[in-house]
Length: 133
Image (tube, rainbow, N blue to C red):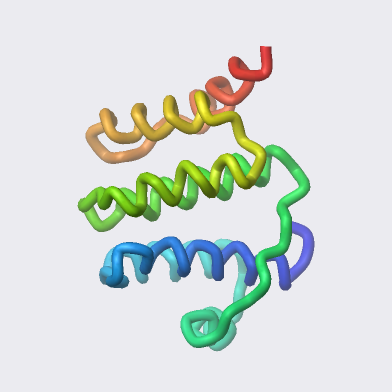
């Protein structure tokens, strides 16, 4: 992540995704808070993101786009409830990020089948690499 503004943009995108089902669950808030800490976003700035709308900044690096997609997928699974709106939205967001739709489907399927909703980072990258060939 290059700039603080990009970090805020990523978090704002995640917050918007978290409330797509009409509710922000405690687990989703906790997950967002952990991501904010990981990105070294100030607590006050993080809380302000829930009350303001930021313009999304494009993510230039494919690796960072894949990472952000995976964070969104983890967020989708963290409340234990998969909503149809979330599934539709995450697929569209992945395509808008320039990610391969077939890889997106495979990642989401693998996460759904995983007992903890997570997949190995190497597998994540490998699935996207396979689609490049």
